[in-house]
Length: 222
Image: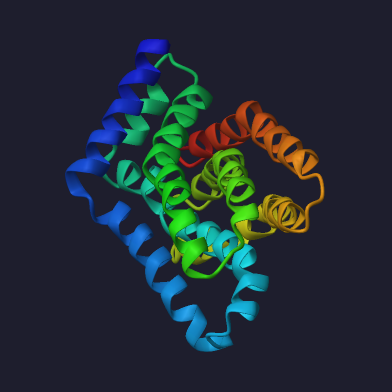
């Protein structure tokens, strides 16, 4: 089973780096949207500092959601996903491997890019560490929860829209605690409890989300 998970994980990584368009799309959306935001609220440093944490977190959430299609859809279209479902390896473990590859190629790059965007939006330096750690702990939950939505809409028309409707409400706790951690750090208040909550959400998603997504994938072939 470990060998099968590793094979799926490495396969997804190779596909993403070989094609590159999906990763570039998520990062480009993150950069362009953040660059345009000051034009809407004004270039005042004080205003940008107030909203910077929320902007970075919301754009990270949307960028992750933008890349959820590549979790299962291409494998579903070419029949590879059906072959995976027919193997002896539990589908939940294969989903976990695919979600891990999704995080490495989406959540991790966004986390590394976030401090640059935050400084561009004039986020106080006191909040940078909380922002990076929060994204590092929260984005795995986004990939895992997103896997459920991506699996549920397999074979559906306008799957991207349906995925957004399914996963956005489930992303709200991650967004709230992530932004609250940064705001607490900037205000000089304890922000460790928010990190623990984000870690707990991601840890709870590891066994639950792959199981639910795996069941949804199998039901798509019945």
